[in-house]
Length: 409
Image 1: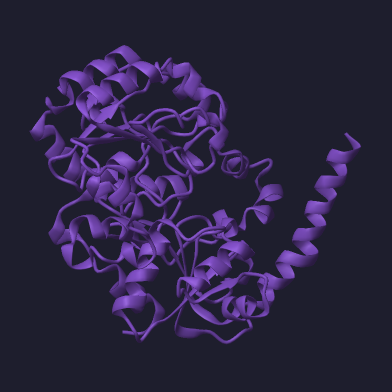
Image 2 (image 1 turned 90 degrees about the vertical axis):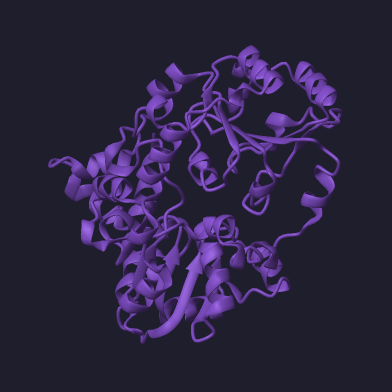
């Protein structure tokens, strides 16, 4: 009890003696309109990564800076040619206090950029179309719920500046998602623009297909599935209440799966959520046709080479919609438990998935064996694509919109 009180007192003092003084000071520093500061926390990934690569390659008039919250990762990025800085270094702080535009795929406080925002323009790219409820619309968002309480709201607001400071641009993908995001984050509809996610651009635009390869190695592409007939990837969602043992509940017989894959000369890749401990899948080194990918690996350069995506509640399946003649198997083995204990869903599950649903390992194995996942409703999939990704004629040029907000055009 005493330690809990000490932690809370320390948090309060840190906010009011450190964070807020820095925040107010950041309004006084000069800002360069063409200095765009990107960040995604410890690693370079997601929409912020791909927009950074696009701007760096195609918009030389913009000074693109990457801010990282991990010293080791910062050095790795520098070695790859990225103009990267540790966020607490002298130059990192300098760029944070003078950047005219802040761009991130998450809340700014998660990527080390919140307290230096000041008068800079804030662009939130977010990190996926949600199947699950977010922020104010979910019962699991404690901060949002407490801020909505008239009795407690004034107490929690100072500690949730990331929810109070609204983005100047919030990236959406369609009218459906704009309306939903507006309700989730309480951002006015007029501050959204609808465009494709930067991380999906290489999947649909051949002209930009080389962008991911500026940082990624081709070793995985060339080595993992050379001579394989078909490649599947299993990407289960992390469970908030069962981080380490949820896969055991799927009752997967990995030996049977290996036998089927070997018989068909197919390959199965396993990619866990970045927050899932790799120890959860430490027993797969003996399986020739099942390969475990590093959980921090950027999967997007590999997606075009995947024939079948196996997932459950992950937003990855929305992005995978961009790839034509591909298939998705949904394996929500713990559906009832997930929606009652982990996350409440934003959309009806069966109405908004674009592939076959299997609920047990035996059903999954049968689908892989018979390739029943090819039996899809083409018209439904077309409607879902338009619902979540909109129409091409309605899309804006994201970089042009950022330039407009920044006062460059």
